[in-house]
Image 1 (tube, rainbow, N blue to C red):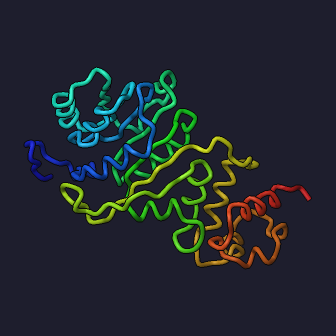
Image 2: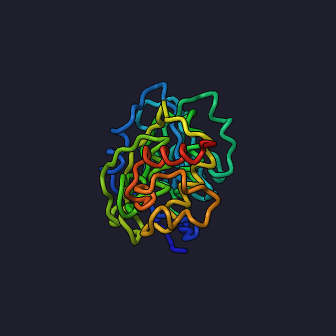
Image 3: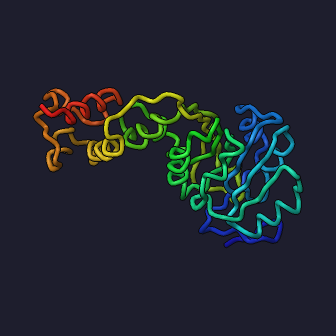
Length: 262
C-alpha cells in the first residue's frame, strides 16, 4: 500500500490508479448524451476525479459502486449531491434488478483492470438495461476487444463484438494516473447491439469458439480433432485454416453445419 495525498492509503490489491488528466475526463463526457433524464453509473470512483465532472452535468442520477469504504466516504463528503447514491459493494455481486426502474443507463468508468472481463461479462448479461458508455481499459484489452482478424483476435473479440458496438477513442499514457500504472490505457465507447444474429444453441456455440481458438497458431482441424464434433460436416478448405483467419459469419456457418442432423 502507498500513501496518497489525502492521507488515505491506496490498496494495491484493488488496482487503484487514479486519473489526473482532465482532458481525458472531458473526452469521456463528450462521447455520451447527458441531460436531465440520463441515469449514469460509475464503477470505482476512487477520490472522485471523474465523479466531480459527471455531477457538473445535467444528469438525473449517478449511482456509484465503490468497494473501498474510505474513498466512498471521501467522495460523499467532498462532492455532496442529492443525485448521487453510493453503494459500498462489489459491482460483480449486485443484482441488476435494481437498475430496472431508471433504465436505460449510461456507464462512465475507469474500470479496475484486474476485473475488466468479469465486469464486461456482467454488462453483456444485462445489456437490455444499458444505453451506452465510455470505459477505460488496458490498451492490450482494448486491442483484443476490437480485433477483426490475426494475432490477438479470438473468443474475446467475437463475443463482445457480437453483443456491443465499439468505437476506439484516445490512448491514455501512464503519466495520466497517480500512481502511474505500468501499461498504457485506452478509452472505448460502446453501446448494446439492438439486433444480433440468431445463433443456434448460443451457450454451446461460445464453448465451441473457445475450442476453435484453443491454440491460435494451429488449424481448425487440429484444435477440434479431440472434441466430440463431427469434422466431416465441415468443409475441408475451412478445416485447414486457423480460426484467426475466419470471420464470425464463417464460424456461424461452420457451427450451423455441425448442428445439422444429416
